[in-house]
Image (cartoon, rainbow over all chains, first blue to last red; front, top):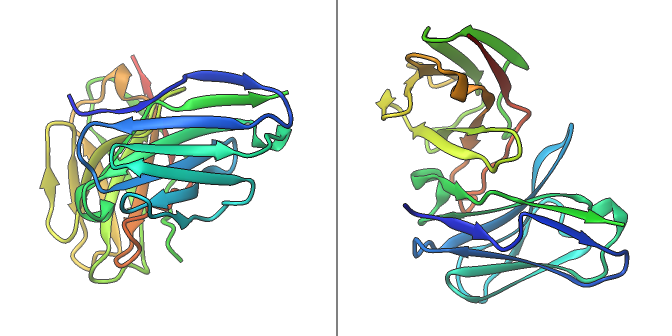
Length: 114
Length: 111
């Protein structure tokens, strides 16, 4: 079964810490995405990448950065975590343009910043 | 506007068909319609997608109106495991395939 795997299901970090959220896919997909999901706000796109070492800002990139050194891995970095970054983070990948083939999502990482 | 319009919530009885509507009146010729569902504390799960013709797969059927301004996701026999939030998404051409999620329809299934 094809998969998108997020390294942690639950994470608790302190304000000011540097946080790494890891995502790995085993489907040889070109495109990878990071979303965050908050009650009442739905899913919002943070960053996406359509190739190794390529990245594009989504709707809410402030406070985040990303890294894609290998095709299968897409990392989301919170340079200095803040309490307003407490959220559910979802990674997704797609073959080609996701509109043609669909997305596969991971199970999510619930991050709490205290 | 890239978002679609869906009812906030719907109810169904177990083992009955469910028709989940979606309006996407600003759709253009190259925009696909996608449906995803999300169970509590899980990531969204792909259900089905289509461009112009009706589509069927093992999970559901997608009926797209002739003018493409609306579509309906059909679950043929609802089960308790189908209770989830269902998102109808207009996947816009030329956007690297980014999906813009709306609020979705929360489907409740009664035994």
